[in-house]
Length: 181
Image (cartoon, rainbow, N blue to C red; front, side, top):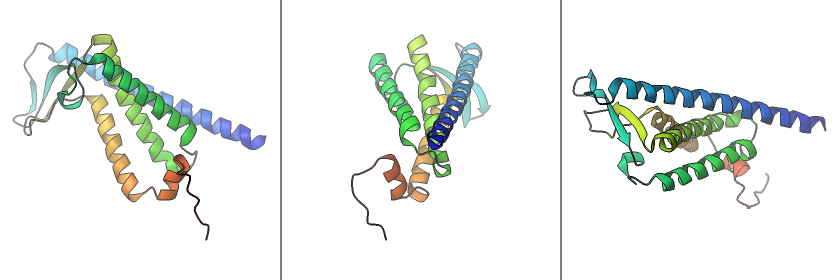
């Protein structure tokens, strides 16, 4: 009984901390988008480093790299599905062990990024983007996109060099029985 209460306490604490951090990240994303609307909309680009980086307002009515333009509802539905799956994994599947700390951070970052852009899509019918690397003509992006890219990079690096097969087995059991040595 005591162990169950301790597990529930740790789960509640993990979920509460994840929700607060996610809310703060979403708030920062929304604040920067508000600043972009106020400071950049209907104005020329604000050059930070000539020929390299500038702030340029863009209303993105699609997804990454401009795909699925004007497909609001498929993007909303897809985002909601991703959020539900990630929240499920965060609460139910990721073990409450120190080793999985980074995986929890990754999920919080992806959820915050997805939710930040979802808020725009639902409230405005487009996502506010404003960072532009003109040197390489990279698509214009925002803070929420940065959260998702950082999380994806971390997931790849940790998946290759930190987490082992037995760690993934704890999250998504394959059904194979491993022989104990």
